[in-house]
Amino acid sequence: MIKNQIKTVFFLALLTGLLLGVGQLVGGRGGLTIALFFAVIMNFGAYWWSDKIVLAMYRAKPVTEAEAPKLYSIVREVSSLANIPMPKVYVLPTAHSNAFATGRSPGHSAVAFTQGILNLLNDNELKGVIAHELSHIKNRDTLIQVVAATIAGIISFVAFMARWAAIFGGMGGRDRNGGGILELLVLAIVTPIIATLIQLAISRSREYLADESAAKTLHDSEGLVSALGKIHADVKFKPLRPMSTTQSTAHLFIANPFKGSGMLSLFMTHPPMEKRISRLKEIKL
Image (cartoon, rainbow, N blue to C red; front, side, top):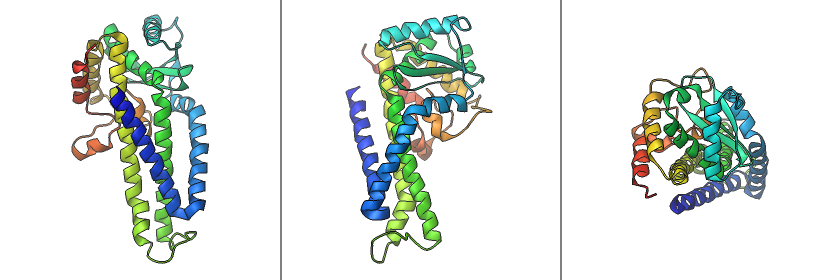
């Protein structure tokens, strides 16, 4: 658990350093200041409104205890075991089997389940999934991932502008003499790829941490192991439609709605399911 926390701190520092380097490359001190300004503004907005945005994006419907008594009962039980406030509960109207947590803090959080996952899992498996999602809330993973995604997004935007600048005659505001082609290529092409890889590495480390935290919260890993196996098999045949299929929110879900293998696995938000299950089985409770 400590190892994954250290990895997160390292990758966030690396991503922040990359952002500052991009700002410096684009416009010296002025570019650095602008990059910092946009980072602060966008992180502030993401911190306060990301939960509302993603719930609306996936057409999540709030449910009451009267409408879903069993689900509420399990969420309340696991919340108590995790020692966090009861989150708001939502259901997504899709046969796709998945779940996610969102919110800026344990006191302002929500957990959402697709109708597919509620139909697919038994109570013990669902408890494992809920423990995983509540671990994200307790570990403040939603905030960490929002910050990482925001910084990576800024870097990608700057790179996009750099590509346009290259097409229309260069980086006008730069205070350098001659030979900026190599720097421009690095900024426009290499930098956003590095930023994306770092962001995804953060996401994968938090998934491992949430799996481990869930097992330790319940003093049991079998329910989550079984649930992950079922979800992994089901996701292949029931894609996330007709809702958004953007990769920008894939990190929120307990299982990535998209496929990836070989080199493409480097660009996935989640570790391979086989590795997650293997690690869970090795946890000493």
